[in-house]
Length: 222
Ligand code: GRF
Image (cartoon, rainbow, N blue to C red):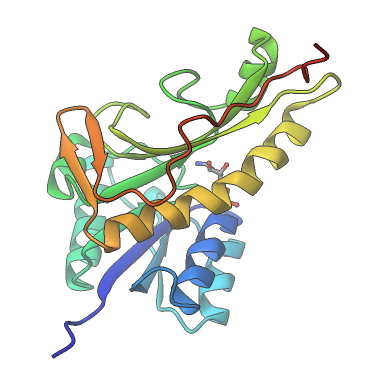
């Protein structure tokens, strides 16, 4: 007998391109799960439209309608629990969540961040990486803990920072990789292959081991 597919909720505040990558990989069967709800804290964002186009239920929970962060998060918890979700994916959700929310969903709350954590947490990180003069940036999918962008890391992708990059060009290069590693991470979660061991995430039976993989920037000439 087939068990019911894993139920995912995605929280957005904007364009939702990461949401789209998850919708597409659920639809083509790469991720063995179903996105049952998309929640936005802002009305009218494109992420909601993407969900509606795919026939996914949406809900707007406007943070401004609540007296404080705790009350807003209580309502989010209620909405997500009512949808009986097994996994909550933050995808460009621009609200810091309370410890209570994070504890409620501990071990089943993921986020994507456009930098190589633990470097460059927070906002404005593409420009921060350029300003720091590092040769590489990238993106990170991680379990959410009570800190800001501090939780156990599931997957990372690395991209070079090129001469002439600005936050926009670098951000676009990073975003392309986000659309790879978020579906990959959600797939591993849905397959039950992620084991939390303290701060480390162990992946059962990795299939894509690339122990010799390296990229060098600037490209080596000798
Ligand atoms: C992405 O860069 C993500 O890493 C960050 O917010 C952005 C959301 O983009 N958390 P989108 O809405 O998925 O297009």
